Amino acid sequence: MAKLPKYELQHDKDKNDWALIPEGGGRAKRRFETKDEATKGGVLEEALGKGGGSVKIRKKDGEYQEERTFPGSADPKSTPG
Image (cartoon, rainbow, N blue to C red; front, side, top):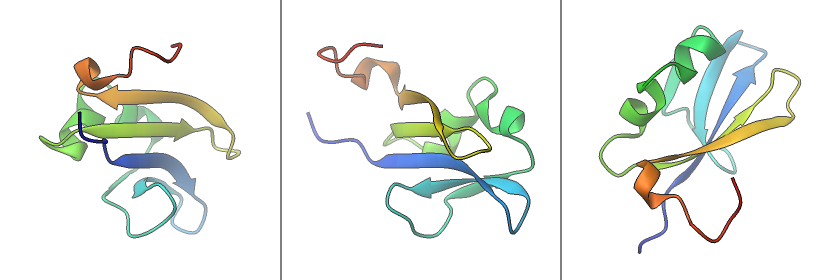
């Protein structure tokens, strides 16, 4: 199976919003007013598009909260969680 693109959802202090950015940096794929808006049912999956991807979600303080994989069937079975 091909590797999924990796993204991070993190708070942007300068713009006071939440940005979905490629892991390692780069231009935001999509921005959200709140974290709740970004993580509610289907929004991240829609933002990633048909190719899907893996999203590491950070807390406002920058620490990791969780990771989600879209589509769910692409989630590696060899890792816990």
